[in-house]
Image 1 (cartoon, rainbow, N blue to C red):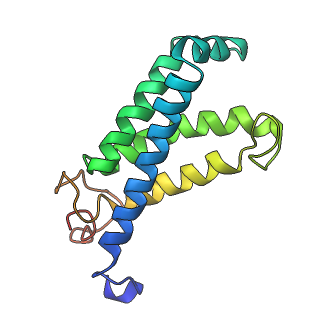
Image 2: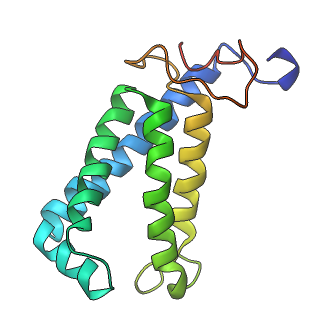
Length: 152
Protein backbone atom coordinates (compact mmCIF):
# COMPACT_ATOMS: atom_id res chain seq x y z
CA UNK A 1 0.00 0.00 0.00
CA UNK A 2 2.96 2.36 0.20
CA UNK A 3 2.53 3.47 -3.40
CA UNK A 4 -1.05 4.56 -2.67
CA UNK A 5 -0.04 7.52 -0.46
CA UNK A 6 -2.01 6.17 2.52
CA UNK A 7 -0.40 6.38 5.94
CA UNK A 8 -0.67 2.89 7.40
CA UNK A 9 -0.07 4.29 10.90
CA UNK A 10 -3.07 6.64 10.91
CA UNK A 11 -5.48 5.02 8.42
CA UNK A 12 -6.83 2.48 10.96
CA UNK A 13 -7.84 5.40 13.20
CA UNK A 14 -9.57 7.11 10.29
CA UNK A 15 -11.51 3.89 9.70
CA UNK A 16 -12.37 3.80 13.43
CA UNK A 17 -13.65 7.39 13.36
CA UNK A 18 -15.78 6.72 10.30
CA UNK A 19 -17.07 3.45 11.79
CA UNK A 20 -18.16 5.01 15.09
CA UNK A 21 -19.67 8.06 13.35
CA UNK A 22 -21.72 5.90 11.01
CA UNK A 23 -22.77 3.68 13.91
CA UNK A 24 -24.01 6.64 15.95
CA UNK A 25 -25.88 8.00 12.93
CA UNK A 26 -27.60 4.67 12.25
CA UNK A 27 -28.62 4.32 15.91
CA UNK A 28 -29.94 7.89 15.90
CA UNK A 29 -32.09 7.18 12.85
CA UNK A 30 -33.26 3.77 14.02
CA UNK A 31 -33.69 4.03 17.76
CA UNK A 32 -34.21 7.74 18.38
CA UNK A 33 -36.09 8.75 15.23
CA UNK A 34 -38.15 5.65 14.41
CA UNK A 35 -38.67 4.22 17.90
CA UNK A 36 -38.85 7.20 20.26
CA UNK A 37 -39.86 10.11 18.00
CA UNK A 38 -42.25 8.61 15.44
CA UNK A 39 -42.83 5.26 17.25
CA UNK A 40 -42.67 2.00 15.34
CA UNK A 41 -46.42 2.07 14.74
CA UNK A 42 -46.22 5.59 13.36
CA UNK A 43 -43.28 4.66 11.17
CA UNK A 44 -45.21 1.62 9.89
CA UNK A 45 -48.18 3.87 9.05
CA UNK A 46 -45.87 6.26 7.22
CA UNK A 47 -44.33 3.40 5.22
CA UNK A 48 -47.84 2.27 4.25
CA UNK A 49 -48.80 5.82 3.25
CA UNK A 50 -45.96 5.91 0.72
CA UNK A 51 -46.74 2.46 -0.68
CA UNK A 52 -44.49 0.12 1.31
CA UNK A 53 -45.68 -2.69 3.57
CA UNK A 54 -45.83 -1.51 7.17
CA UNK A 55 -43.71 -4.40 8.45
CA UNK A 56 -40.72 -2.92 6.60
CA UNK A 57 -40.61 -0.21 9.26
CA UNK A 58 -39.65 -2.88 11.78
CA UNK A 59 -37.03 -4.32 9.43
CA UNK A 60 -35.51 -0.88 8.83
CA UNK A 61 -35.57 -0.10 12.56
CA UNK A 62 -33.78 -3.37 13.37
CA UNK A 63 -31.25 -2.96 10.56
CA UNK A 64 -30.39 0.61 11.53
CA UNK A 65 -30.23 -0.03 15.27
CA UNK A 66 -28.41 -3.37 15.22
CA UNK A 67 -26.23 -2.26 12.31
CA UNK A 68 -25.27 0.88 14.22
CA UNK A 69 -24.33 -1.12 17.30
CA UNK A 70 -22.30 -3.57 15.19
CA UNK A 71 -20.45 -0.69 13.51
CA UNK A 72 -19.60 1.00 16.80
CA UNK A 73 -18.26 -2.29 18.15
CA UNK A 74 -16.47 -3.11 14.93
CA UNK A 75 -18.30 -6.41 14.57
CA UNK A 76 -18.10 -7.65 10.96
CA UNK A 77 -17.75 -4.04 9.84
CA UNK A 78 -17.45 -4.79 6.13
CA UNK A 79 -20.47 -7.05 6.04
CA UNK A 80 -22.60 -4.62 8.07
CA UNK A 81 -21.54 -1.53 6.11
CA UNK A 82 -22.26 -3.17 2.76
CA UNK A 83 -25.53 -4.70 4.04
CA UNK A 84 -26.84 -1.24 5.00
CA UNK A 85 -26.27 0.19 1.50
CA UNK A 86 -29.52 -1.19 -0.05
CA UNK A 87 -31.50 0.32 2.85
CA UNK A 88 -29.83 3.68 2.17
CA UNK A 89 -30.51 3.39 -1.56
CA UNK A 90 -34.19 2.92 -0.71
CA UNK A 91 -34.11 6.02 1.50
CA UNK A 92 -32.36 8.01 -1.22
CA UNK A 93 -34.86 6.96 -3.88
CA UNK A 94 -37.75 7.87 -1.61
CA UNK A 95 -36.32 11.37 -1.18
CA UNK A 96 -35.45 12.08 -4.84
CA UNK A 97 -38.75 13.83 -5.52
CA UNK A 98 -37.98 16.35 -2.76
CA UNK A 99 -34.90 17.77 -4.46
CA UNK A 100 -31.21 17.59 -3.65
CA UNK A 101 -30.90 19.47 -0.34
CA UNK A 102 -31.82 17.42 2.72
CA UNK A 103 -33.27 20.51 4.44
CA UNK A 104 -36.01 20.66 1.78
CA UNK A 105 -39.51 19.78 2.90
CA UNK A 106 -39.63 16.00 3.19
CA UNK A 107 -35.83 15.84 3.02
CA UNK A 108 -33.72 15.75 -0.11
CA UNK A 109 -31.45 12.97 -1.26
CA UNK A 110 -27.99 14.47 -0.60
CA UNK A 111 -27.66 13.00 2.90
CA UNK A 112 -28.70 9.43 2.01
CA UNK A 113 -26.29 9.58 -0.95
CA UNK A 114 -23.48 10.72 1.34
CA UNK A 115 -24.26 7.86 3.74
CA UNK A 116 -24.21 5.39 0.84
CA UNK A 117 -20.74 6.57 -0.13
CA UNK A 118 -19.52 6.61 3.48
CA UNK A 119 -20.84 3.07 4.03
CA UNK A 120 -19.11 1.83 0.88
CA UNK A 121 -15.86 3.48 2.01
CA UNK A 122 -16.25 1.82 5.42
CA UNK A 123 -16.84 -1.52 3.76
CA UNK A 124 -13.69 -1.10 1.69
CA UNK A 125 -11.60 -0.02 4.69
CA UNK A 126 -12.84 -2.60 7.16
CA UNK A 127 -13.09 -2.07 10.89
CA UNK A 128 -9.86 -0.23 11.54
CA UNK A 129 -8.48 0.29 15.03
CA UNK A 130 -10.13 -1.33 18.07
CA UNK A 131 -12.57 -3.39 15.98
CA UNK A 132 -14.11 -6.35 17.75
CA UNK A 133 -13.77 -8.56 14.66
CA UNK A 134 -10.14 -8.80 13.64
CA UNK A 135 -10.61 -10.98 10.56
CA UNK A 136 -13.36 -9.84 8.26
CA UNK A 137 -14.60 -11.37 5.05
CA UNK A 138 -12.13 -10.72 2.25
CA UNK A 139 -12.81 -8.41 -0.64
CA UNK A 140 -12.43 -10.43 -3.84
CA UNK A 141 -11.35 -7.33 -5.78
CA UNK A 142 -8.22 -6.83 -3.69
CA UNK A 143 -5.06 -8.88 -4.04
CA UNK A 144 -4.15 -10.97 -1.00
CA UNK A 145 -2.31 -8.98 1.64
CA UNK A 146 -3.99 -5.63 0.91
CA UNK A 147 -6.30 -5.96 3.90
CA UNK A 148 -4.03 -4.11 6.34
CA UNK A 149 -6.62 -1.65 7.65
CA UNK A 150 -9.26 -4.20 8.59
CA UNK A 151 -7.32 -5.82 11.40
CA UNK A 152 -5.56 -2.98 13.19
